[in-house]
Length: 431
Image 1 (cartoon, rainbow, N blue to C red):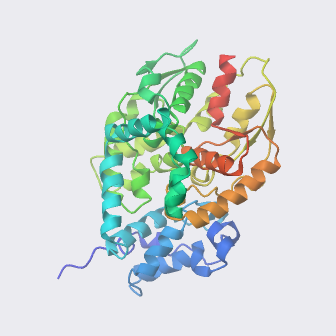
Image 2 (image 1 turned 180 degrees about the vertical axis):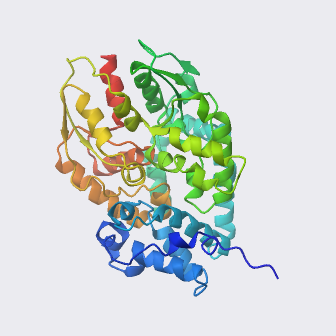
Image 3 (image 1 turned 120 degrees about the horizontal axis):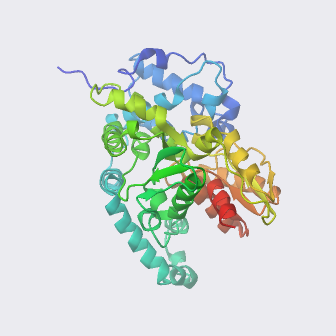
């Protein structure tokens, strides 16, 4: 009889046993901080993973629930003195949960098939949904429904989901960015720009701003009109094989030997994009190219800091800005100083440090959809600190964080702009 496949048992055991159980990760974990329960901590979760790897525990529903209660913020990796690769463990643990089928239900199966396999499997399908939402918003139907009070007749969870509906921008990235954008002034580099999937719907202007900023800093920018999902959403939700398929498509579309850098402006996506070689380690055809890919992928802040940022003109309006760190940008990619460096280049901008800037805002991919109570607590905590800065603008380098903070400002009735740092730099160049 063939043994049942196990993602954790098949994982390199040195990764599983690396945790020393020292507990230094505990104060950095938002879920442990909220509950003070060992099972809700990185150390507790790793103990469960190791028990499965050691064949002392079967993947139960309680195990699966715990893996999805984890934010995957990776703050524990920054705190860990032993260098535990929690990101790898986390993805395999969720894949183990899915493989076990303990969370399976007809409703959940349909939702996952629609979102992960169908909707995020093709950009045109996602854009079709985006056009429908845009029509709903542009015709005033959304405002009419919200103001009518009819939503009070719906269950609380549906009201919460409706309130989180993102605003779809008036144009997609391909409408705003030419396939080739020439460097302004002397050409120094040739780069590719990844426009993402959800980012293409809700923050296409951030992609446009990124292309403009790169061109202003001596880069020829290649931006194919039709791009796909990077696979981050799939890997973080236990669909590793789907994630591998999308990784191969990305590598085929952007051959790494043709570019000096492959640029991403989404912290969560970037953290995943830099680890294609690990994802495709068992694929001898793609592994060499994946290794070259990993070396070329750069976050926009990281790349600009490396090549030197051209300062905008000296005369700029004064503005007070605070900066929230995307978890996967600071903990996953270790990009923390560079966004601040970018912001400080802008004349007239005063950067006020945010208390607990590296503490998760509760977005965490789709965590705010699947774990609304914990996500809401984290957003309230984040908004308290943001408001305390008295800043006019809160900047962050990840679309999920941008949307979460917009939701927080709306729920608090706060007149505060939420923006990507590269947008602030692009605006300064235009002036």
